[in-house]
Image (cartoon, rainbow, N blue to C red; front, side, top):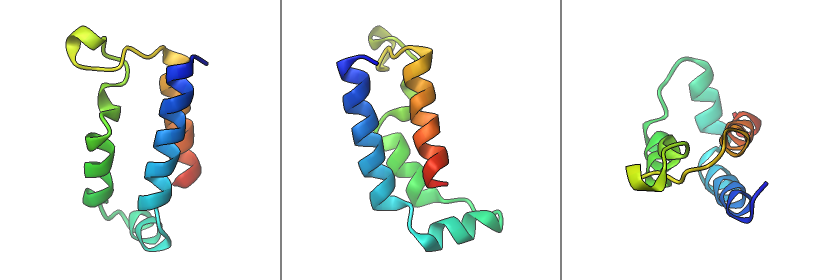
Length: 76
């Protein structure tokens, strides 16, 4: 993984640690949408991870983007 990918993974981990508490996880299991948590994901720019920098994204590779998904799955 690139240095930027490693930094992003650390940032994503901190973001999920700050937002994915037991109440959020329990609510999501009942089908409740975690609006505050999704807003944090958007604020980090994660939905744009695969877009090039010219397109307003990070330009990460597919393996780096999959690492973001893996981290999200860990906290889910």
